[in-house]
Image (cartoon, rainbow, N blue to C red; front, side, top):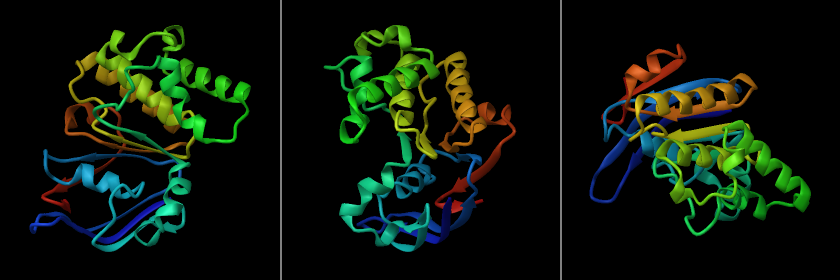
Length: 216
């Protein structure tokens, strides 16, 4: 499903974020990407949905060469990828329900089907009862669960999360990871970047460790 071959990423000014990164993810696999702050985890994850493009090497996602995609083709690539960011990127002038509905507003789903999907996604993360709340009324852990519901509302085959448990207490962090495990158990491919190696160890999943832009 995802394949990196000798991938490098350079930024202007000479910063080299990734160096000769090679690995593959099989469909339905769950993988943790660990490493210190600045190791290249976020850059690597951004290459998967073509938020960033590789400087060298190839990134293949669902059979498509991300580095060679035309800009007009990127939205089609992302339709099968759910993205969860550390800062959630929620809209605070809209309700929880409206935030989760947002990806469906760009789809061809009939209104009733879109509403059913949004409520099903909120139910999956345990927030159906808060659908009319404003995100500002929720705890940090609840806001992250809204972000996860929004990421999976299109039922993607690949779920990518960048530090989804950052700034959460231990109980909330464990609950967030349990949600990702639940999606993995029904066949979703899951990639999670985290610096919390202690939290990762309890799940017994594959771990890829980045060190100064290289896979250790």
